[in-house]
Image 1 (cartoon, rainbow, N blue to C red):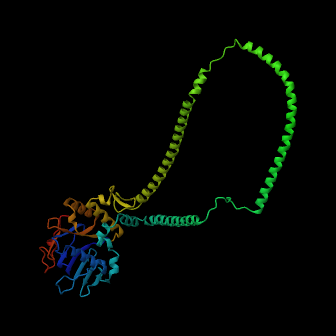
Image 2: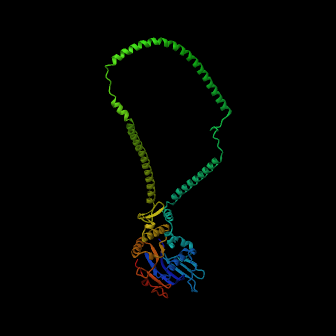
Image 3: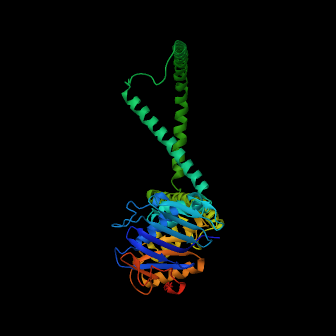
Amino acid sequence: MSMKINKLEIENVKRIKAVKVEPKANGLTVIGGNNNQGKTSVLDSIAWALGGERYKPSQATREGSVIPPTLHIVMNNGLVVERKGKNSALKVTDPNGQKAGQQLLNEFVEQLALDLPKFMEASGTEKAKILLQIIGVGPQLAQFEQQEKELYQERLYIGRTADQKEKFAKEQPYFADAPKDLISASELIRQQQEILARNGENQRKREQLHQLEQKYQRTNEQMTALLAEQKQVENDLETARKSALNLNDESTEELEQNISNIEEINRKVRANLDKEKAEDDAKTYRDQYNSLTKDLEDVRDKKAQLLNSAELPLPELSVKEGELIYKGQKWDNMSGSDRLKVSTAIVRKLNPNCGFVLLDKLEQMDMKSLQEFGEWLEAEGLQAIATRVSTGDECSIIIEDGYVVGQDISEEPKKKEWKAGAF
């Protein structure tokens, strides 16, 4: 059973002199009136009565009053909450007559229900964090954030170490004529042995030269014999020339054309090769892109499954890129009524035992949005007590100079004397 407010009596709190209110069980109860008449004081009184000392106004007693504040609230289960006397001491009486205290109230009073603007004015990230927490995926999100933090710290350490190493390297002297690696005695001995081996090779080449000189001498002797043979070859050549006079040569025009066009041909070949290379590269990158796209879609699917499997406070409410999304819109694009729906639904989800919320300054909403919000509250079985700078028919009661207009404070109000309100 979610807790709601059945009756409320306030005396001498801030601007309130004496006010009695019976909010609607379901839907919107609008407290109207002009500025500085005590509308907000009603909400502040409820927050103080149910929320504890943290909500006590800095100047709780009405200015000019010698009588201390009195707060009396009856909940829908019969629980009675009172604050009165010089110290505004808390007294909680359960339906069985047993006495209790703030601890009992804390079981069903959600702090954000007493201060809904605190949620509505929070950053998009903070709103999303609250939602993720209440739908049960907050721990997983915290795990991802912890991994991110650890990776960031590790990268920060590596970067600083790299900076230190680079600075140290710049401060060291450099000798261009020094070898790249350290050398040792054994290395020098090895180099000496290599030189000796090369000198031995040089000696072998000198011996080879001597042998070739001797061979050259023998070759000269052989050339004398070849001169005689050359004479015979010349005679044969003359005969061959006479035989070649009647020969027909083949055309090389086509080859010459191809030779003259070789640069153009090769240019085209290279262009084709470049095109094929570009196409291959494009395909490689496209394959990588598609693979990454699939990975990205998998991550988004997992995130969507995580949110879809969670019990969200409202249909079409989700988290995208760290921000609340409702009906496809971020917070700054939501209508006033949608913002109130989202905030109220999340507050209810935070503590299902709390069946009411307090709303200040609803004059920012037009009549249509106000009506839509009121109808939604009734459908959801939620109670909202709100203020609005107005004296119109949409107001359940109107406060003027600390009193409810038309209310006889000397008598206990009869049910028919309470305005039902438009919503």
